[in-house]
Amino acid sequence: MRALIYDDLVRFYPLLDPLEDHADEAEAYGGVLLGEVPGAQSLLELGAGAGHGAHYIKRHFTSVTLTDLSSPMLGRSRTLNPDCEHRVGDMRTLRLGRTFDCVLCHDAVAYMLSESDLRSVLETAWAHLRPGGAALFVPDALAETFVETHEDHAGDDGDRSLRAISWSYDPDPSDTTHVYDFAFLLREGGEVRAVHDRHVCGLFPEATWVRLAESVGFEVATAQRPLPAEYADSGYTDTMFVLRRRGG
Ligand SMILES: C[S@@+](CC[C@H](N)C(=O)[O-])C[C@H]1O[C@@H](n2cnc3c(N)ncnc32)[C@H](O)[C@@H]1O
Image (cartoon, rainbow, N blue to C red):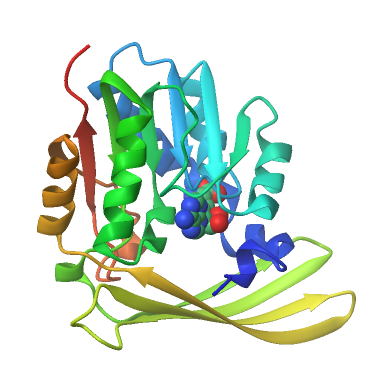
């Protein structure tokens, strides 16, 4: 199912996920990648969305390529990051035919719903890394620490306003997915409408991540994600996967 906030409702996306909220985490991701690959110059991001994280992390690299399934999301990123290359593509099948020093895949990896999906995006990272390069995967949740949560969201930009509740829960703990339901109230041009946007997301134990990454060929380590204080007990994980392609 198409997520409306990445498509028809993309103009409301910055009200849900403000640019400034990405500054600290992007700095941390840049630090991890440059620690793994000193002197790294090129970065590929899978699922870069509106390019909010990229806006901050790009200063660490001389060339940055941003990819995403959604043209409308990449359209926003093109405006924000005109100095980056943009390519529409599915992270499971993307093949640009060249390699990078580093690959980043952040919250968008949530849309990998099965082990086969997760393995595919790990293979995409491998295919785009030079020997000696490193990938950083930053999932929002892991199965062992997942808890049901809800959050309020509010944003205004002068022309539009958004108020929302998101509700993350797991209807069937025996499978590899959970549900992220958004109830949006969207005000625009004096009109308010209510929209339900359902996101089905993947949920895997840490051991599955490690097993699949090792089976693709990566040397796997974990690092701690610097989660903001308000994310404590939120079901977000602070585990990031640092994947090294040996050689080089
Ligand atoms: C939360 S947004 C990413 C926001 C991004 N981190 C930023 O800083 O702007 C999640 C993104 O995942 C993308 N996505 C979902 N499935 C995908 C897939 N199979 N391949 C590539 N991108 C995908 C969506 O189009 C959406 O833009």
